[in-house]
Amino acid sequence: MSAPLFVLLDRDGTVIYDKHYLADPEGVELLPGAAQGLKRLTELGCKLVLITNQSGVNRGYFDHPTVEAMHERLAALLAPHGVRFEAIYYCPHTPEEECSCRKPETRMIAWASRDLEFDPKDCVVIGDKLCDVELGKNVGARTILVRTGKGADQEAICKDLADWVVDDLVQAAAVIEEQVLAGRAAS
Image 1 (tube, one colour):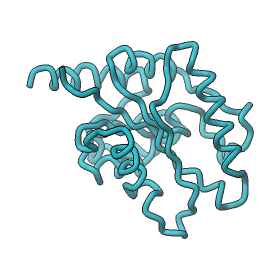
Image 2 (spheres, rainbow, N blue to C red):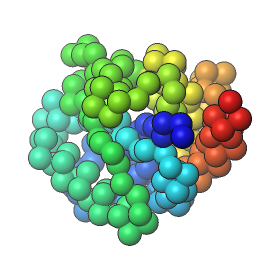
Image 3 (cartoon, rainbow, N blue to C red):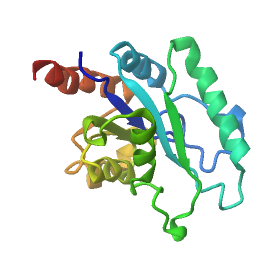
């Protein structure tokens, strides 16, 4: 039996509505199709990991406990669908801090691959922005741009870089099932 496929997902604009420095856990709202797409990935045996930039922490808009509370709310919204994240990683830094964990830099994936023991080249990164696609490319992973969140606006600059461009997480799950997992089974 082959190792499970790890799917690394952006948060805002990919799984939940992007509400620009969301600081209230009650404001966490799943995007249409997010629960269904993530449930399908779980049914397929994929392991889900959240990788998100949260510069609002170092900008002083909210603190680490608030980020944790938002992730607890997200987990509560997904639990009835049988969906859970293996881990959640977030970067609290602003772009000006030039850290090595803010997407598209790769430190969060390095942490995830170390903690969860997977090869970053054998995962799929899904997001709604160029930095998500670049993150995946920077570690040699396959990438999916979703048109939710900022994805439709970013499609023109991402379409030649992303491996696939789809409407939402339901379509992303279908691509992973038909293109990625089917290819793994055939090899």
